[in-house]
Length: 371
Image (tube, rainbow, N blue to C red; front, side, top):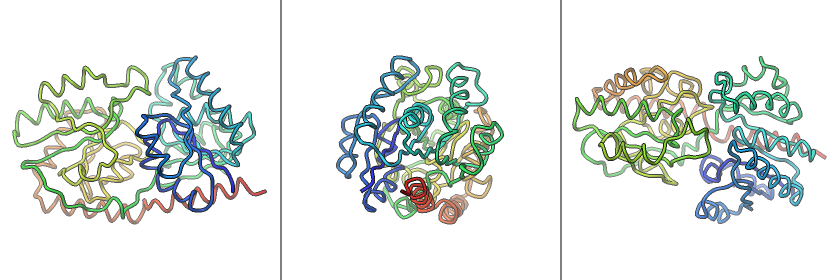
């Protein structure tokens, strides 16, 4: 049996968007170990699904945290001696690849999104740009979730074309994320689903909610997702900010959940005004459940939502344009929203089947572990 190690920022992704991939690997006889962190409940859930879990803690910007994180990775990888390592998101892609490179472990990296990597002058992103160019040179395979990100890395000389491949995001299990009947509250419900960080557009959503509440008392503006600390301090939403929005009646906060399907089913429209995505899982799941969406006309969002077809697109960082598109969605005839939802699911089934992603991983693992 071959050993596969997955390095994740947080176990939540393993339990959700990566669940089907890990189960497929286990069913094919691989020993799968995940190096990550998370709550005791989330880590236990992953273990109950047959995964070996090692909590290697977080790796935020503090140098001592990074050093301890890399030390924990090295210790675990030396003990496991994996045949291949899979890394996801920016920190595992950089710090994880440095460790796997030193241990000569074949590594498959997924660039799940780049955020402001090439735009920000913050020291963290300047360092990330420098390190990406070094660590990806020896990476066996690099998956990109959209063509724009892949082309940027190719143009910058970060990767060779022969080792780069575009996959349709994380894909979506359209049988699991299928239309669902639930008891709905009266009125019209917008739903924002995301980790509560600013570059997901939460500030613009709250501002749009304030604007529309003055016009339409019957609209509900809901938010679901956890507070998040594994980002730059300038990018996180604090508990104080969240409580203020709730107290002032700007939003209704529904907390965090392991299963967003009932919440999606109970909403009339999903809103994600993200500044940029690899390929938005929220939009994939919502479209798969036949919900129209409002999102930004940006990479990783406009790949899924087509303006006027299965939702509406707004300008990035423009709360006024966002509120205009949300108003437009609210004022649509219900049959038109139903039509949009059905168009969205058609697109998901055609282009974003999760099995495409799983097959790409199985092929890549086979190619880098051939003895």
